[in-house]
Image 1 (tube, rainbow, N blue to C red):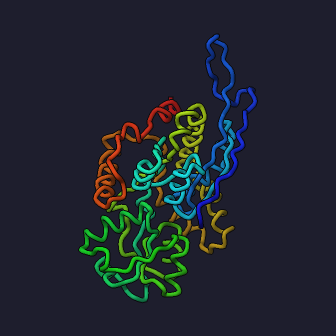
Image 2 (image 1 turned 90 degrees about the vertical axis):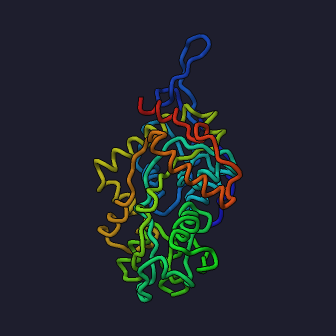
Image 3 (image 1 turned 135 degrees about the vertical axis):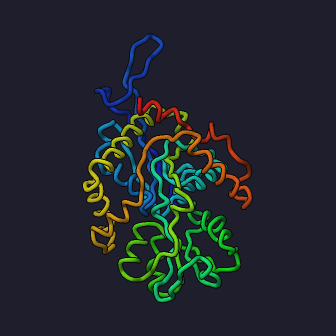
Length: 332
């Protein structure tokens, strides 16, 4: 899918009947603040499904937020949309966040989930590929430029003695990979749920490794710096809606699964509900902002890897990249 063309923004001032945040004026009179309509980007793989659920759960409306959705196959495309200022908010993992910050000043307003359990390197079942070293000389489908793609190329393969040129990296969107395995145009894939579970259930591919043991992959909700600076009054109730989503994942998982399962079946994907629930369970939803002692080791490592690969120009100031103040207000 190509990057969505920029839309003319239509901003709406919500009525003052209690849906907005109160804002103090110089005279001490408080008026309902105008909540900005959010242009929400998300990927249609499993990482983006908590955001899809957010958009269809009613929680945004409950907190007075209106949103337009911009779905794409993977988070690195959302990041590119945001750098181009076509989208205000979007989810992706740490490496894409660092690249987006380097290229367009993007910032994180929350950590949404850990997604390492949703990523696998899988090989065609007929080839009986059992370990990463078996990929030498093989055609490997990879979402080049994505966080997962970068980790695979820069961390996973070198740790097993394989470097660029030792295998044939085939640039491909994750939603096309299972079909490519079935057609035998690639030998393996670096892919995300639910496509991994579909390939496994259909007997098309077997798992070589999953990413959770390599990287827990924190996934952030990012914002353009302009949106973060101008519309903090919108971001606080927006994040309150995310806290409601986190509660649903923990306390009403079947309801969440029904909403997201309907999305995939409407797109023509054929999988049992049990297979789907297993795929969805690989995401660990924890909307919030972990302490620097927990996040900084991930971000420092990502930054070092991206600097070495010359994908960013400098390591950022994490205090400017990770904007914790909005979530602090949301949980207060």
